[in-house]
Image: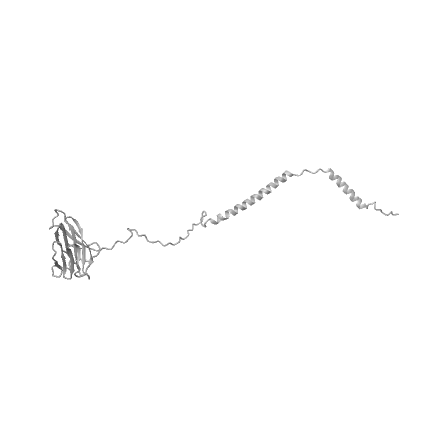
Length: 244
């Protein structure tokens, strides 16, 4: 005959579970847990924090180096080909130094109108006409004349003549030059007192002749009759146009 179960009588499965729980509890009480590895945990934490700082610093240094890398010009690395940028063109004015300046053109005779008077010094005047040379001097105030058309000079051949007058310690020198090649430019007169440089005058139209003149102060004892030893007219190239 079966007896009905009451509230106080647990089921067989429940009783078995309760016995197992008690047994496990007793076993757990008998087990002594090992101490926690706190020191190891702290060391590991420090390592992790150190690695994080290192990573952050490395990233910061990389950011700082980026602008420096941008400044490096291409081609400046070791072994890279050198590249030169073309220089900006600049307008440079040529220097105007005395050595670089072109030589001044050689002088040419002064061109005068027919009958125009040229005063060398007071009292010494010259003028030209188609017939020849006219002049006055302090020693000879009356006009004098030397023809270029009377056949006394051959204008086809180079030549120079000389007229000289002295007075009051000065000498008045003049003459006709003619027949040279090129263009007359200057005259040098060799005197007992040294070289005297004179001037040239011509009529317009290149008549093939002209007049030279000069003045000089005569030193005592120089004499006057042999005062002039040579008269040379040079052309614009420095060559001899005519000589006396």
